[in-house]
Length: 143
Figure (spheres, rainbow, N blue to C red):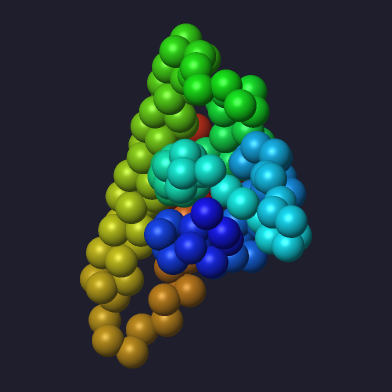
């Protein structure tokens, strides 16, 4: 299948497909006598897996390390499971940080809303910052 057909089937731009090829995510591509790239049918599925992995937060380097050697259809179960579990931990950590940030912003909003209309929000900045430090649990600067 030529790149235009693969692009249409996968929903990806031809330039993105070529980029994945340059990055070593797609195996060696045959070229016809006319010089056009010829992709195997399995390339569409591989592209879909790459896109899904990126959406899950995997970098291209991480994806490259997970892919089976070119031409090999066998995925390393242990390697794949370890990477997926590691990504889950990363996501959970990020969720905790986002939750703490959300709580801190809610506290700031509540403090500002408690000010009289027309009041100077920055007058009470030290109180707001102290409140946020308490919520962060370490009393230090807010990260």
